[in-house]
Image 1 (cartoon, one colour):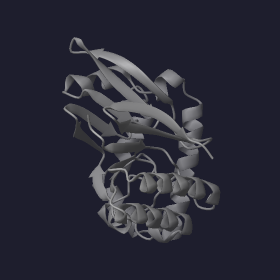
Image 2 (cartoon, one colour):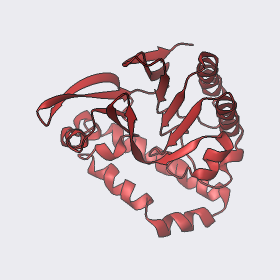
Image 3 (cartoon, rainbow, N blue to C red):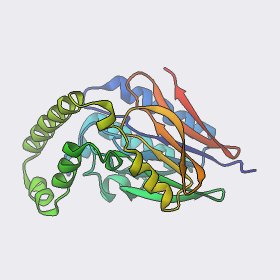
Length: 244
């Protein structure tokens, strides 16, 4: 039985001016450091929005990156995945935090199981509005042009896009903006035993039938009211809350 401990978190949504959330997440990181955990996986939307080069100097963002660096310096491996709000995060940002960039999704072997990690927005296949926007903002040419814009312009555009996205999602049924059953099943049909994701801000565990066997989906929840996270320890997963 393994004594290793792995933490998984998503949708912290650190935002400029939100010192309280910085403080709460920093406390969570202190807990991980004191526990001498082996790994921390951050599955996207660590930041409420990220506009590319220069944003790492924003005070709340910098404070969190430096705190993550303290955790990695203590011996904890930290891995970053991109979310739909901070998809511009790159290896430079990861280096500041002393973390490793894993991109959009990855399969990780844990005690003989294949665990698929992702933010999860690409699994909301019935939300065609979001999927079309996701494709648009990931066009390489558009991203290159966006990076060339002055910082204040990039930030203003990001805030407008964030506002539009929130309003648009609020006007669509939950079954549309949620994870699509066929997308979840596809992950398991491609060999994963466990799927861990965020994005929908729903904290929960679900058993899914695929390929004639049972698989498990863990949705990590968010950090709006308390800190949702998943812990793997002593050969089992457990959904928990970091209270403040």
